[in-house]
Amino acid sequence: MNKTNPLLSVSDLHAWYGESHALHGVNLEVFEGETVTLLGRNGVGKTTTLRAIMGLIRKRTGKIEFEGKDLMRLPLHRTAYAGIGFVPEERGIFATLSVEENLMLPPVVSKGGMTIEEIYKLFPNLEERRNSQGTKLSGGEQQMLAIARMLRTGVKLLLLDEPTEGLAPVIVERIGEVLKTLKQRGMTILLVEQNFRFARRIADRFYLMEHGVVTTGFPVEELDERMAVLHEVLGV
Ligand SMILES: Nc1ncnc2c1ncn2[C@@H]1O[C@H](COP(=O)(O)OP(=O)(O)OP(=O)(O)O)[C@@H](O)[C@H]1O
Ligand SMILES: [Mg+2]
Image (tube, rainbow, N blue to C red; front, side, top):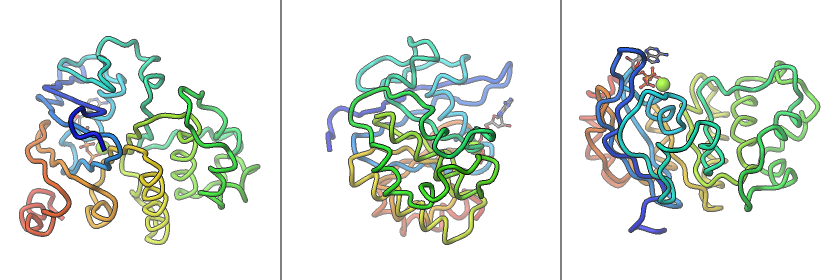
């Protein structure tokens, strides 16, 4: 793990929806090989942070560097090519395409991505359903497909927005196993998650967001001692 130069470095990031100021100077860093979880109550700006990193929100200021490259200067369609894969909360599975067509759709952006055989090994349920239409998939299968299709592309960083939301405990468990395997393979992950009982099993570090800024960062080892405060801040 390279602890001197972060893979992703975000500083003083502001973002707006029209006149509405949603991010008020977000600072965070993600080092290569780490899994970092962004916690925070509803509406504090977690999704907005991921969208602003991807360039999906154009009204933004601050600094976003990935592998030392300045992402603020890239046009939108180049952000994914820089090597960041975004799995949005709504998953974005193409309903009229089959599982395999969905898997093949995102372009390869860099060497080192997984082969389709490796992906099916990691997601045997997707292989079984390779010819099923997107609409026929359960929520859990859609979530797995949304993650799986990023793995072919060779991205180095995955941004995952609440991948376990609304899913049954056994599926959440399965997604946890997949993320652990990806981590072992060297993938770097920035995960938005309200469920910190899930996140603690895979996260190396946590950031807490409140009102459009990151207020605290701490390693997973400190989670227990911070639990009371987190329960209060997160309202869980
Ligand atoms: N498309 C939009 N247009 C206008 N305001 C928005 C839009 N999306 C989000 N917001 C506002 O921006 C703020 C941050 O929202 P965001 O979705 O980033 O929060 P979040 O932390 O991801 O919340 P949640 O836990 O509900 O997913 C909120 O006040 C929200 O109402
Ligand atoms: Mg959100």
